[in-house]
Structure formats: C-alpha cells, structure tokens
Image (cartoon, rainbow, N blue to C red):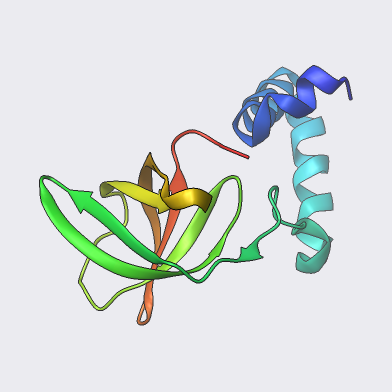
Length: 129
C-alpha cells in the first residue's frame, strides 16, 4: 500500500474496500463474505490508529454556547476521553480547550463518539500532534 493511501486515513480505506467489493462478481462477494464470517473477531480488530497517552488535565469545553468542565483521562492525535457527570449524546459537537505547556490553550472541534457512565469519548475533527 502506498504511503499516500496510508495517510488518507481509515475513511478512504473503507471507501476503497466498498468500491472493490462492488466491482466483484456476486460469486466473489459471497466468497469474501464467507471468509469474513469464519475469521476470528480478534483478528478483525487492530490497534488504535493513534496510540493513547495518559493526560490528566482539567478540560474546559463548550457546546452550543454552554460551558462545561471535565477531567481528561487520556489523549491521542485523534481524540480523548473526558470524565464528566454531565449528560451528552453521541454525535453532539463540542469545542475543547486543551491546556498546553507554558499556560497556552488550543481550541479543538470534536464530536462525541462514545458515552460511558464515567464520561465521554470524543474524536477530534482535525488531528494534531
């Protein structure tokens, strides 16, 4: 796989796979489906695209001009988990202020992708490193 394919991300890989499957004959599609059915689930999951690192910081974030505070648990280039007692829904858009060294903060748009009793998992809408 070319470097540009790897850099284009998971979404483009999915689109490419769908195109390839649509180009297959019905017999080829059935064969692929049968192979996937017997493949162990563990082999179908992979490491996260972006490894998580512990990141325990007080996080300010807003949604529709309403301010919230939580405590981040971990972070990666693609997202973070924020411990919060506030109620949210998957799909909601928020803006997170992430504290950096030397008292600076960056604002990052994010989408809530996971809800757990202890908080929310968010995916950054643009990656940073």
